Length: 255
Image 1 (cartoon, rainbow, N blue to C red):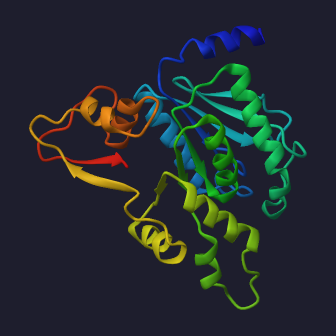
Image 2 (spheres, one colour):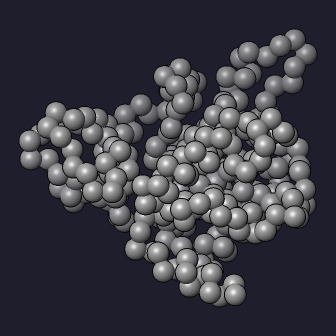
């Protein structure tokens, strides 16, 4: 039965598929319990919208409940994949860094076993970003990073007696921000924090204006993206699966 599942998964390799890494919390967790919150809701909603547009999503999270199967369907071809790393139980967030190599190994092994060909990897929070940096180098795909909260911002607003964020988190965030191909900020304030506190490059993705004859395929031919360039550019600009830009439209392209 497991081999049939692999064959079915490999059978959709001609469609773009995204690897999402959410190590410390699952999109199926109840918001408000443990470390779960708005990030869970965001990841699940994004996976559902991408799936509805024909883009498959595999969300990798750390297994923390032995009652849950290794793979759970999220709907429309998207899945949650529970990776064994450390105990199959909740672990305090500040103890998770020691399980990062084991988690990375599990993600890579799963992708290799299924022959997964991801178009990009999108990580959430710095722990997942550490995993995504290595996966990106091995898979040779772009890395998109979201943080949701930033260690330096939390340290600047500590209450009296509150413990600051550890150096591992601060250095981990800096490495992911420096290496990511794209940074996703929830608000203009977060974008300014990434630039001001972490020296993120604001022009990593530049904005261009479409002319009367601009076509996505033309931009894809000039793009440094090696695989699925047209599909990725359409995803970036809300044009997936087959829309074309209108004259005067501002387009995001990858330098």
